[in-house]
Length: 156
Image (cartoon, rainbow, N blue to C red):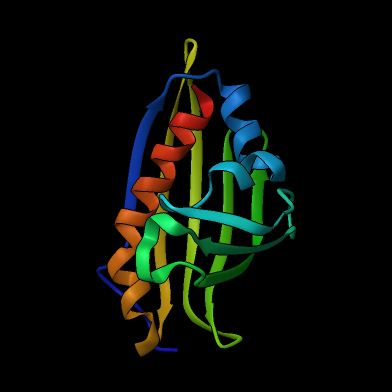
């Protein structure tokens, strides 16, 4: 796959929840399954082993809210590179199409306690793309923004 550029993304939010609560939302697979992905998406498959070398496998499923995309599945897989409890998660992920990776990235999520709130910064570095990744790349910022919006709602 060719190298990617100009697609990196950073989102910082101050979440109205204590650090321990935000950490659990990011590391407990059942909690992550409840908020992961853009609006209108559920996650019928959610393997999320938040530990060094832990496995990631998520299948996002488009619901009614997404109109003609309803029923579309967007699988991804990856691996945790580093986990520093209540401080940092680093994981690689691949968006898949027809069983092949079309988009790869490296995600770093950092967490900083701010009293009873938590500053969370998500940094996504796109490392490889294929021509089939055009759609996912075009929707990456919106998808991550909506996912973090859903996380905020989940935490409230």
